[in-house]
Image 1 (cartoon, rainbow, N blue to C red):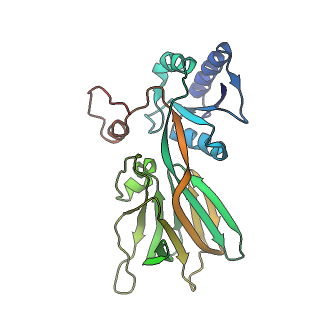
Image 2 (cartoon, one colour):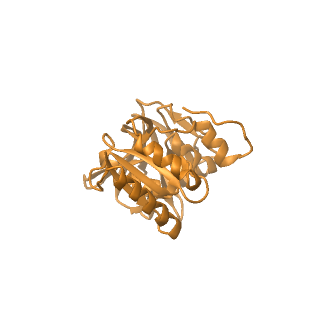
Image 3 (cartoon, one colour):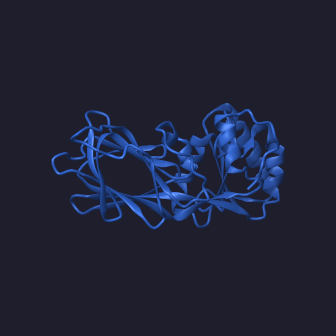
Length: 274
């Protein structure tokens, strides 16, 4: 099996990386950072997001697994203290995986250019100086006129991140959907939006169009941990991506256990498994 190992800068992560790499060498796996079948992330959720985007164009052939070295990560299944158990599971890898939906983001520029991106957690568009004014469409139908600081569109697994802090719902990843939440919307007699999170079906899509007299200049687009400044945008389209992310299923933790571990942390009962 071809394996790539990515780790967060720091002595602890480097130490675990060296142990994992030595185990891979002893198991006669092949280290391959260009075309891996398994990508191991050592660090936290940020490290895993970086690893995901490194291989975002190879999602049909690569699986991911995380070992966390700090606070409990939402995507990382193994702790530093469980390293021997993880290495044993790695040596006995049977190729099983569990998959989650992803977010497709397509940017159409006024000059005809088009860019396609993919996100594991969410994409947000924000204006930090002044407000962002846009028309929101669901499929071809205009849904609302938005004015505010920005918008967040999240996947089910990403629903526990920025989306949750904005008052969005936590969504189980078996649901193929994306969720739109508003960031500090303005609602008055002139500007009117739903001001409530919405989830759309897999065969629908969301289109954000800046109004003619409010160019989307000075607006920042984020894709997970990556952020870009964008301008001269005709529209941005969000939909459930045709690709899915695959995590190695050694002892994959149940989604609601991840939620409880991350946000409540009071349940000492045995963990459920998917």
